[in-house]
Amino acid sequence: MPTDVINPATGTVFTSVPSLGLEETDAAIERARRAFPAWRAVAPGERARLLRRFAAVVDDHLDELADLEVRNAGHTIGNARWEAGNVRDVLNYYAGAPERLIGKQIPVPGGLDVTFHEPLGVVGIIVPWNFPMPIAGWGFAPALAAGNTVVLKPAELTPLTAIRLGELALEAGLPADVFQVLPGKGSVVGQRFVTHPAVRKVCFTGSTEVGKSIMAGCADQVKRVTLELGGKSANIVFADADLEKAAAAAPSSVFDNAGQDCCARSRLLVQESVYDKFLALLEPAVKSFRVLDPADKSAEMGPLISAAHRDTVASYVSDADVGFIGNAPAGDGWWFPPTVLLARSPDDRHWREEVFGPVLSVLPFRDEEEAVRLANDTEYGLSGSLWTRDLGRALRVSRAVETGALSVNSHSSVRYWTPFGGMKQSGLGRELGPDALHGFTDVKNVFLASGE
Ligand code: NAD
Image (cartoon, helix red, strand yellow):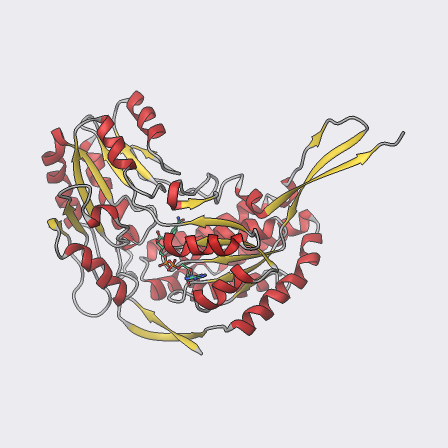
């Protein structure tokens, strides 16, 4: 049964894709299981070469992939090009891994003890709709590099780029069934990754609620799991910060990708002595944020992903104190303007819950101790930022905020060569960086007796 694919900037259906059932999913997992022994046996240098070739083919199709994402996910063309480039870069980065997947030689009496990083087998990757390309690549590139075969389920709303990446992998020369993309429902295809015994690991990115059920399901087979879940990250502005710079940077830290970003700095904490001044600086920056047709090169933000999601986002604004609102196109498509809400207290729903839209909640704080307490007063712990000119404070607060990634005097958080992942209920395990590879292997210890 095919699923319609809708352009969120216009609200119109522009294509449809198949939605796989249980039998087709099982057949694909079986093919992946059969492809595993030959793929793990490919010489490290050859596996590296194939991944580099895959990266080169992605690069050759960068414009096509970016265009697909603009139409399917409403991402701005600037972002979509970065995202396709990120898949290429992550493939190139992990192409360096097969030849460097080095074990240890451990001194023991009576023989030789060595460790191997063995691939797991079939890895199931479940991807959300907000960053369809990068999140797919963060899973499949290291998984393939470590010698696993991969089945990947894109989100129902955004399957097109993942399907195309599956085709490009074959074009690059990856053997058949080593990397398969299986569009379909989470409750069917995704669940089967959890329950099928041949799938040895599930790499899930999505909501905390679904992530918890995946973790519980995987427990039944002691299946390995990586979880990248929700966030409600804080942006803490101290009175001694460069306020102009912090105010200019704040909008993109939460409104990028229309706020549909697990790392969105959606809670803004401003020291009370500069609260009014900071909001006065923030207002023009929010009002001039360019929400346009995502295909327009100057667009900074596009539409939300769906009509239903727009209703959810709107529900957070209806009974809140609105500080100020930016601009958005009227008419067709799932548009929502950048919106700044003034929290009455840390109990406000919009302050506590992940809105996943272009909504920023603001709250004043008294001192460093209160800033850290408010920042940590959440079940999430994915990302965050702090702005100060005091080096000691920057160090103290960086260490005290319970979050997997944090930036000082900037909002950067995801680089493919540094680790990414959440503390608390934002996730389990780390993606990207030098160590992610080990999440796709098990350590085997071998002792060889030297004899009498
Ligand atoms: P979601 O949890 O609804 O869906 C994510 C994926 O899981 C989809 O492919 C969906 O089909 C699948 N799925 C749904 N139910 C399933 C089930 N029972 N079994 C197996 N698979 C199932 O999330 P979403 O709405 O697509 O994405 C938004 C969420 O993702 C937000 O909470 C966001 O914070 C989070 N996210 C986290 C990160 C991160 O790296 N931490 C990155 C991006 C998005």
